[in-house]
Image 1 (spheres, one colour):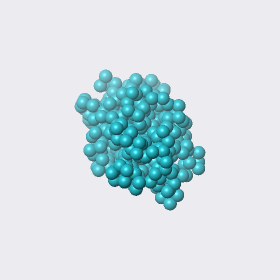
Image 2 (cartoon, one colour; image 1 turned 135 degrees about the vertical axis):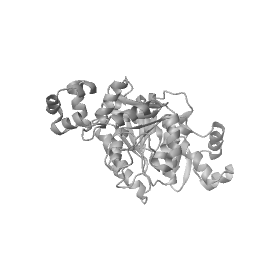
Image 3 (cartoon, one colour; image 1 turned 90 degrees about the vertical axis):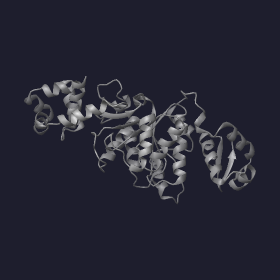
Image 4 (tube, helix red, strand yellow; image 1 turned 45 degrees about the horizontal axis):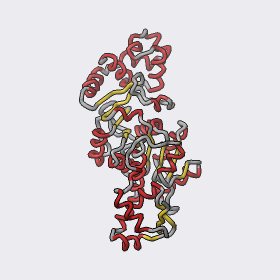
Length: 358
């Protein structure tokens, strides 16, 4: 088994042999071991002279040995295109990685999932929205996928973990590295309770060119992509575009017309993305029904939520009035109202007022 996996690793660790070339070689010869046993003339015919020369001459034995040693550590895996654990959703994408390095719960790779992405410079409200959407979606059996970046990505992962749901972080470095360093605690928690994956060789540092490639995996793994906040030139729009090109659904949360962080979402909506105000909007579009008996959609604790709804009554009410009725701060009320909005039990009205609708 180690010899077979070693051949897969060798095929992907040779510089200058890109993913499309790797797939052509696998199609022609059947396995990585057969690739490295093939005659030079046969390799040149399939891969071209330059790639064939690299395949025949490049020495990456040390890197292969290091990767095999890494897989021997608890929780670490390398998944190849030929493995049963390889995500079926990625097999249908235009450019599936030949191998994936993974840390954590490998069974999450084939769980139906939604990507949640957005601005690194997110507003507090945007982060709260991402957390609440992630909690709601994992509460009905979906996994939440994001890219471990600061802002919306990190909030989505946190929301899933707080709801004890499934989350997958797709990173633009080697799976043995953590970027950004400010998310170190979060990354370790994901590797413990969720799944962290990368197509890049171990030790790969953060490079600008890596992140668009990471984004295609996020898009390819998911049933759809939700953009929570994004500036007009946000990298999140790349993920949304790739999701659309791969035939996935694209969703966007609207915001203030005065907010730079809403301009990217509004652009997506003008281009045909589905405007969403609640998790239910997404579930209806995906025709998804709950597969988990968890508590509904990250709502507040039952007694607290019921008490808040009772004190709201059925007429529109503003935060100051609610604060007087409940004795809670505005921040505390907003933290409770947002999950109720996502469930469709409360609606936000113009002028900062709220109304109970269930």
